[in-house]
Image 1 (cartoon, helix red, strand yellow):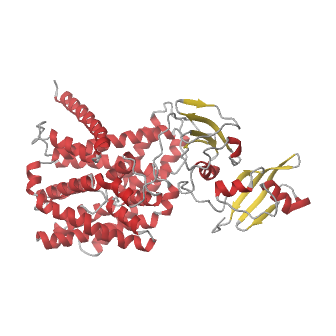
Image 2 (cartoon, rainbow, N blue to C red):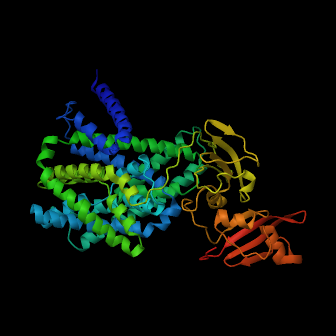
Image 3 (cartoon, helix red, strand yellow):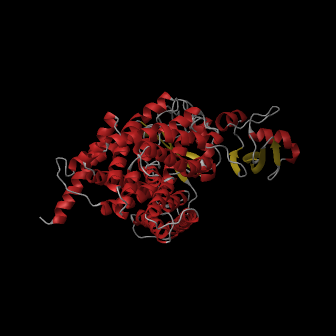
Length: 573
């Protein structure tokens, strides 16, 4: 058997063990990434597998590619509307919070371990970031559903704070080796990395979105390959120009995911699979790189570092960063406890080894042990923390069927699936009573193992999966019909006009959409317009009620058929 044959066999076995460990994780509650590390450690030179591996350069290279793909997938799945609402606090955590966390750990390392200031700051910088792979895996695979603002803040922070940790680590190494001047040299390094990373990521994301939607490829399977190439290009171009590759690849994913894409579902499924393979490969490889005997020797300093990091430095940094943004104490506590450590600190711990910094081997073992402690303690208890703090949201069952339109290249429409919870406004109602906006229809209802052809008289029940064909402009309105207000996830947009049927009842407008009008006696939008306009009722005429403007858009046989609704900027309907 050739060496490559054994390598392929080993890769297959390790991937299968990683997948099996993910199933075990859901049963025993242990974070799946910790189990991947255990699989690698068991396969290593001091475990039953007996695989001798101590190639830090290879581990660094593989880990970098894997992390880039994980960040790209995380960026693709970032909801831009949510992204905008938590942009300021998340970026504050990703920059100021990382520096404060690193400084807190450095102070502890200086006092307790007797390290020089620069080496102590290097250790703090390595463990300062919240790992995107760990956070995404716990929040998305273990059913931890918390308030949208809290989850979005934690996910966006974890996706965008790696560049700052990398910059701090690189700056400390360069200062230790005398290759960087303090002060202006460090400031220029930070500015160049952040500016170039963000700019390159934005350009690649915009270009990739245009290419996906304009290039007609013969094989649908090439579209995910094209987006993956864009992610690698974003990282490589930014890094080659002296910018932050990790920031670039995340920004490219966010920009690309915010655009309407053909074969969107196939692209998302592909990158979800790539992200899982990257996580399994990265953590198993890092497990192979560890030596349990050395870890035990580093247990004392590592436990001290982990304790200061988890219970002191991270909570204080989160508190200082989020207080100005009016997060509740429970939100701050959960975000502080959700600062999971994963592969990024271990990958960063290889930087001093590759650069030849004295004492780097001991530092690697301390960081590895601290990461394992963080992943096990915080990752294991995060669902419990969400419930204890009262932040847990109801879980939504996965739909039994999926609809996908192969290409929406020339059609401005989406098929969206909604699962009806017990508090959904649509549960227990007939379809004809839902006051749909113009441009949205129910295409299919899946109930258990059956598919129900929708009619106006069809009753919708809790647990039904309702597939709605709609125009993107009215998505927020349909969200309000099928999701309870606390979970609808979208505030009423301002500035744009949204089409509603004239027969929409004012009571339903308030119940479903949270928009309250003050009628004199009318019960529908058409009646309100006729009441206010009288003989002047004609297409184009408008009525303003508070911050809401209603405009007649279509009249059929003397009846108002379509009404345009616009909410003034800053208005509260």
